[in-house]
Image (cartoon, rainbow, N blue to C red; front, side):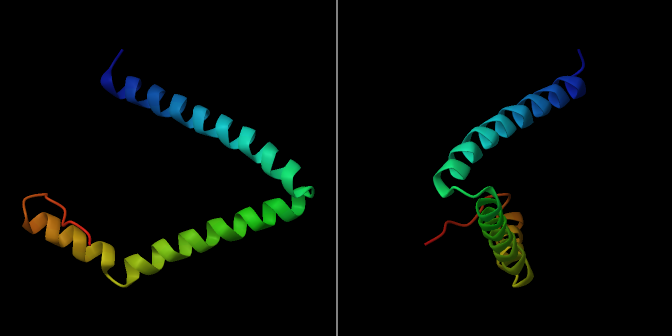
Length: 81
């Protein structure tokens, strides 16, 4: 088996495991909330806010400046705080 094929299979397996946990946890979430539509909408709003925050951080240069600093330091990322 080639390294590329092995990597692809491992990624597929990891994706299946993550998907399985997500389905399992979502079942508990729907039961706790009681309404699948409300739960799914709330979950998607939270996901959108997280993605928006990541995109906003990228636009302000926070991520790019850290990457530039790491590149200038031979690949060593700056410590936070």
